[in-house]
Image 1: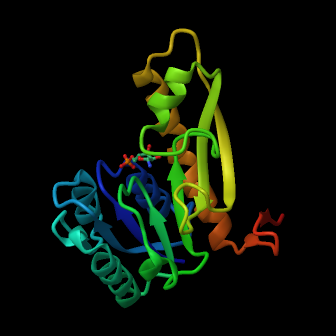
Image 2: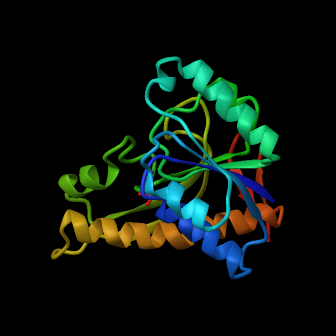
Length: 201
Ligand code: GRF
């Protein structure tokens, strides 16, 4: 499975995927990493792993259609079959969605449909929920709303701070995202006619 990864920041989930491939637990190849920011540390991780990178900047996003067209073109040129958003903080638009239909994954640090948006860990913490978690879903035109592939819960303990909760969530992300990619690469994930995800044995 040839994977293109979109990042905006630290890239710890990108690293988890790089590691899973390197240790042989995920049969795949990251063919390109595209960052929405030139200073994303994930770009360093990609270069260290010998993965080609491409970096955009905020001026480019003044024309979101053009930025998204560039992203689609670059990933197609690199031979990507699936796109993985790993902490990518920009919206993807039709230029990318139509180029990779039902082949774009997103990771969200809460149990969707609860706590959508960019501050999900803080929002869940502030709401005082006892359980939150991680969601991996297919991306579509509606933010944080595409078909859900996998979810894993994380308990919020009385002693947790938002920082310790974030650490627990990130640890779950780092195992769940490669697990989902493993299922996809084994051909076990499909979307049925009611747009629900089915995972076969
Ligand atoms: C993750 O918590 C992910 O759920 C959210 O952004 C964060 C990215 O972290 N969308 P990293 O860049 O992979 O370290």
